Figure (cartoon, rainbow, N blue to C red):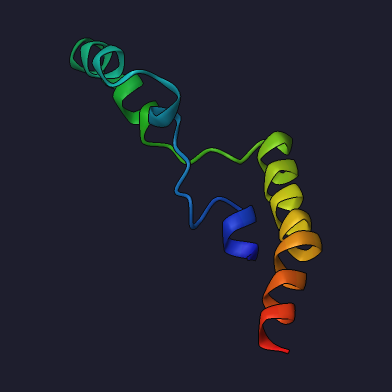
Length: 71
């Protein structure tokens, strides 16, 4: 889980922020930008919040149903 939160598992790069055609066009013309696109970026607080909310929802709603089925 720590790897996911720290962006290792998701492999978040700046390249993911742009439409592929835009990043390819700029990358062909600017070498520095090509290097920038492949740099790892930290995940934002919104990503952390989304993951936390999903885990919370699963714990509250999903786990109870699973346990009830196995009773």
